[in-house]
Length: 538
Ligand code: FAD
Ligand code: N01
Image (cartoon, helix red, strand yellow):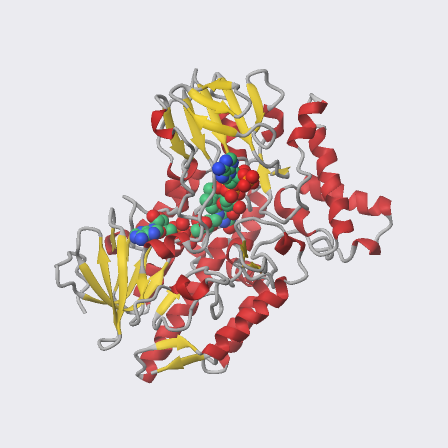
């Protein structure tokens, strides 16, 4: 097959088309090429990086330690890139991803500035016909959707937005907008908002934070990277990979301590203090029962609130910033580098839009329901994503019956291993629903999925198979298992982008796989060891 990336209307044939050139796509293209497959990547953006290309808002950085959130497949790569900070910021991560793309010659195999508009399975030819923006059609035996679970931004849909005469921007599609000396409004206080506000609050003349739901935010305890730790990890890269891939979240964290009731109150407090000092995600898994027992969870939540209140000078304001509407860990926790302290500045203002909602955007700012008007030069929307299905739906993957994957998912996603779904042969949805996905280190999640797909294609080629899809039994069993694992979790009971709610009867489906990375990887290994049990081949 031709490796020529110049496309003709008829389209050359590829073994694999990889849609998306984020962390997953970059690795997938390299991995598949390494095993001798012909591959083309198609990316809507002008360059590699995915999330780290698009989310270039001030303050964007990782929420897990950078020496875990990177590639381990080549020890030389690991050893030659020393992160400057414990939690690297977006520009450094984007530089790293560019470095990886260059080192492995990935960029030459990507068609940039090209959005996939549809991908239709041709059952007779056993191939996908992928229509790119502009009308070019490319065909491939396998379709790998590395389009990201958090890549389709939730659009701002406020009345009057078109009237605004200042500039507005979405955190997830960042472009430079005037901030210095300006009155800036930020709407949204999830991880993106918290990070952006922390930095914008130090740049803008006035910053207005429009908060609908207060979240928990924990200091990252960011600092320059520890060179001794780096040397230790770099000396044993494959072992570190083995360790993180067997862990619950796909990263090195202090261990879960057991049930809270195993410890007397003063020891519990001491453990929590230790975790606070460690920082970041570590407070989410202190006690084994904090995700299922409301009382234990409230003890951890209140510990975090007490610590957070002390960061804010004004006690009334502090209460408004405290999360009291859901238990800690139910949503992905915000990890910050000075968020609450920004509110101690006279020029950073909290606007509680739960109390006084946004009525409309005007020519000159934001009008609240009470009639109050806030004059603004710039508005930043950090409203989150149409997670899991947003980007997949946009690419209009279509089977021979004219259906799209999420047509089958009206009552919650149904997949085998969060990677494949019935009726869609040769389609792989990377870090998809019912895989650890957004609950884990997503670099690892991407790499593990791409390796699984690469091995599966090699197995098919060895056996002369041209078509693979999961059996209905395997999909049902995996979906049931994923639902059962999530059943006792507090997080299933609270609305957020990880929960699918059936409107007719209120049943709730927790979308990512909550059994942990280690358990998930064991299941994948078992499937492979049993000759890809759960898949049907032709
Ligand atoms: P993405 O990086 O989302 O890449 C998908 C690519 O597909 C994009 O470039 C997009 O343009 C392209 N694309 C989509 N649709 C099409 C189409 N139809 N045609 C062509 N191209 C298309 N995870 C962590 O584990 N730790 C973190 O610290 C962390 N921080 C994050 C910070 C932010 C601001 C965000 C938004 C997410 C963060 N995540 C984090 C989650 C993040 O999604 C993953 O870590 C990871 O970067 C995802 O990589 P990906 O390759 O799967 O997808
Ligand atoms: O999105 P979110 P995010 N009017 O959905 C508010 C990853 N990530 O981009 O809670 C007013 O969490 C909404 O309010 P409410 C990480 O996985 C990681 O921040 O619905 N407000 C909420 O405050 C994360 O989980 C990092 O009441 C509206 C906010 O917008 C995921 O990405 C950094 C509104 C959305 O929060 C998503 O995070 C960034 C409306 N109409 C992202 N609509 C790291 O730290 C929505 N909101 C690594």
